[in-house]
Image 1 (cartoon, rainbow, N blue to C red):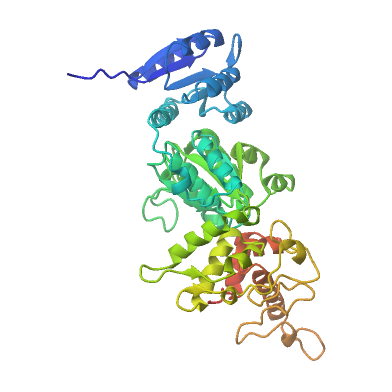
Image 2 (image 1 turned 90 degrees about the vertical axis):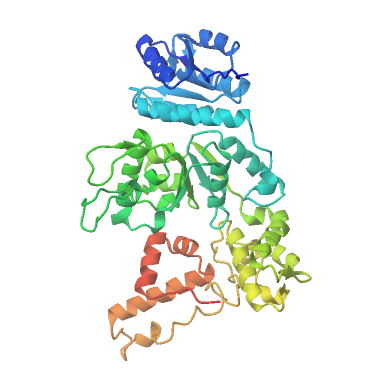
Amino acid sequence: MSVLRTSPRVLVVDDEADLRELLEITLLKMGLDVDSAATLGEARALLTQADYALVLTDMRLPDGLGLELVREVCAAYRNTPIAVVTAFGSADNAVIALKAGAFDYVSKPVALDQLRIMVQSALRLNAAAADPAPDTAGAASRLKGDSAVIQALRAQIGRLARSMAPIAINGESGSGKELAAREIHAQSSRAGKPFVAVNCGAIPEQLMEAEFFGYRKGAFTGAADERDGFFQAANGGTLLLDEVADLPLAMQVKLLRAIQERRVRKIGATTEEPVDVRLISATHQDLALCVERGKFRQDLFYRLNVIELRLPPLRERLDDLGVLTDAILERLGTFEHRVVLGPQVLETLRGYSFPGNVRELENILERALAFANDGVIEVGDLALKGARLAESAGVGPDGAGQGGAEGVMIDGAASGEPGGAAPPAPAAGQASAVQVLGPEGLPANLPDYLNQVERDIILRALAQTQFNRTQAAQLLGISFRQLRYQMQKLNIHEPEA
């Protein structure tokens, strides 16, 4: 006996008869059933009579705003995604609708290829909601921990995964921003599609357009083959823009256009191609402050910061220290040799403020294991004897020194603040800034002298942050890319354990 299968049903709400007919024809050709309404009242009546896989509504209707319908559907029909049709250039309305809970939006005049992409994403989401996977978020989550703050974070991620709205993740370096982005992707209807993470601060400015949008063969010297960019690589999936605050202003303009148009043009191409990506941005910087200082475009900030997700630093969830430590030690150990903690080790770790967050915890344990005997980490292996809590060491909430009387001692190296030990000695074969002074107290070679002064300052900042280059760049008031360039120029390398 054959089983009768019904097609997914879509509700179209628009008072423009021509546009409504265009949408109906497009959806019918996709094999969908369609109901139509010209007013909010008609739409409300139809919603009580059928289960819809998607609601598509105009923002302006004769008897009210589509935004009202967005809120009603999100409240009463939680498994039904709703998208909005906005007037051309009405970016504000689109952002408002997304904040209200809309799944996605399309702009007038409606591009049919973008409409089809959006509808397919909505149908995948609806199917996932109708047949959910077993609830294993707590056990299988990439974000380990049982504290109230991490449980609330996982619940928020579960809600955000249902939307197409851009998400801005904010958190200190090492707090797990990429893990959170991967968790959002894994719980979304895009889980089977690519997840592409891009460190915006690690790409040379002159290569950014080619890396993001791709290029055609022969577009420039060295372009021997055609190549896709990050947007094409993430098509259908999720694109993470990590350290997005490091994007130069010229690239911000091009990125804004790609987000608004949902199309990209390869270098050397004459036409644009549609892309379907869910954007997640991440940074440890205050983007709103970057906007005030003119370092980040306000319109791009507005488009990326539709939904904000804050990741707590490790010092705000020390209850998770045991779970995190167990997970890290399990990864560090082998099948034959399991790594364990000696007495008082966990208590000692609880007394530390972790300015580098979970990443620093991983580094501490990995380094301690190198000195441990028979896979047992003792307190002395941690090299944290001089470590103090942030309140007593003059360390601010972002881990940066506040100029206290003494610097935080890490592995016996001082932060370089007054009262601390001297900054790291220059590498073998390199004179210090003092040593290159001539008999008159003036530099015998000014360029060498200035290079050595800069080298000493950078080494002090790196020692203070345990060679966390992102934090060191923040302390020095320069970008990550600038610091990386200066380290290469001055031959500064991270010391081996």
